[in-house]
Image 1 (spheres, helix red, strand yellow):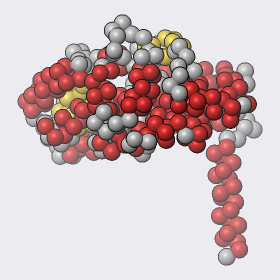
Image 2 (cartoon, rainbow, N blue to C red; image 1 turned 180 degrees about the vertical axis):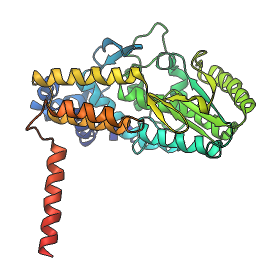
Image 3 (cartoon, one colour; image 1 turned 90 degrees about the horizontal axis):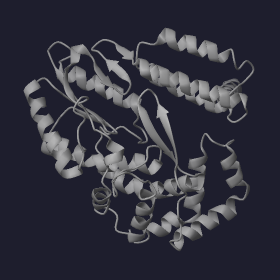
Amino acid sequence: MENLYSKLCAYQNLKLAFKNARKGKTLKSYVTEFEENLEENLSKLRSELIFHIYKPKPLENFILRDPKTRKISKSAFRDRIVHHALCNIITPILEKEFIYDSYANRIGKGTFKAIKRFNYFARKVSKNHTRIAYALKVDIKHYFEDVNHSILISILKRKIEDERVFWLIKTILTNYKTKVKGKGMPLGNLTSQFFANVYLNELDQFMKHKLRAKYYIRYVDDFVIFDASKKKLQDYKLKIDKFLQEKLSLQAHPEKSRIILLQKGVEFLGLRIFPYHKLLKKKNLGKFERKLKELLFEYNLKLTEYDQIYDFLEGWCAYAKNANTYKLREKILEQTENKFVGEISTKEVNRLMKTKRLKAQKITK
């Protein structure tokens, strides 16, 4: 643990962090500019970290309306490399404490697995939808804005002892300015996503070990508890509200936190999930269409590659498959493919090459 900061500052770790930060952005001007003098730029960054003279650049803030208004804060590319370098080192230590049913920003988890688990829990608690059952759906009010830095640091200190690591964490946290000093993390940072899981892991542990909630799922600040007893869920809600306020200085959203009959459909991760079908929420479809339009615009200006559009569509289709969207997906794919006649993605090339190799192996046998 004493050498944690040395591992963080190692050139190989910074190079790996650069590769991770670059993914999906290889044609961006700030990436190509940094890469032109990669060794020199990483060495300079390394020296700044070693001698504690590293200072992140001011965040670039912009407003997204999708349709909910949110402030997204974008870090400079070199600062994103530092975020990846930090997470490379501390994630393996802290993630060991996470519960199985925490699904956001974790390898092998994600929205698809969370929705699958939702379906499994809904069937279990309702005995395959043959009895009445409920879901307590909770959303935390202004979560990222209200994360308390002191509480977060105290949680991290249980597993991390190197004070130099905490110097860097505090440097990253205080680069984001909020109305209340010592509170808040920017939406959009890798470190914010990871710290969001660390912070609410306290709630996860409370749910599993104190309340002993058997059917509980969390995705960032969006979580669901299932039970056949409405009274038990009402009791859970009171205890959760108290825990969030007293232990984490957070507040459950009064309008978005409620107990719902499973048969009426529960909103979770952009879907409205009913016992035998799922609907894609209109605002999520609108968000997808705006993002696709933005990517197509960037592609026409040669600011992005076909690979990025292909990956985006592939990811969205995998997500949309969770709902009853077959005709919608076919329509969108057909319209998009017509715009890219003759284009082929790296993934498609790799699949073709793999198929050819397998055929060649069969022939030689």
